[in-house]
Length: 127
Image (cartoon, rainbow, N blue to C red):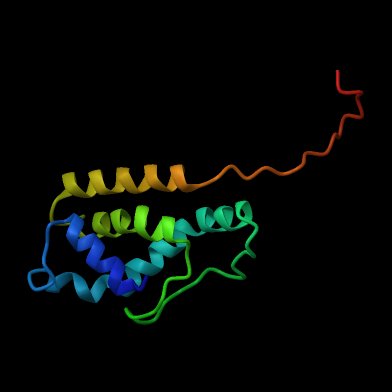
């Protein structure tokens, strides 16, 4: 999925057409970069849970046509809501709150538990 594809999904959630939403286009790249940063921990957890190598660094895009290097679950199930919330923030705070709540819930639902071994620093026998 590209940033432009993500934009199309967000516009669909907002019930906007590309023709009527021209004022949003110039914000796309910076907002997608903010979304990538916010979803980075969830992406890394998904990669670890599936045995895929982690991303070496936080990804950033420079153009709308760039592929977003995240799992499809995040790209389709969470990021469109986050982008829609950012785009309507000034126009309709109620819609923005709804989209942000769905985004937060989707990120939480898509973030697998990240189990790590815990060292016994007390030296007990486990009782």
